[in-house]
Length: 78
Image (cartoon, rainbow, N blue to C red):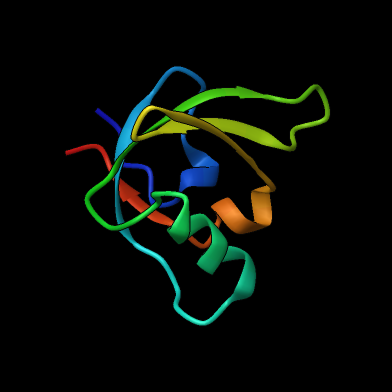
């Protein structure tokens, strides 16, 4: 089993758990308000044809985000 360090690296169809994300960035604060918090399970649903945005599910909601935002979110598979 591979350990992926960021949400941006998670393959389509794979799930992981948020470990940490930076504080103080406006875009990430909004994602935190939408349920992306440490301990939350996220699943990579799909990537747009050019690689972004990506679509994930978290806490029953579908969210889209850019790769540079997802690259700041540390995850683990366990």
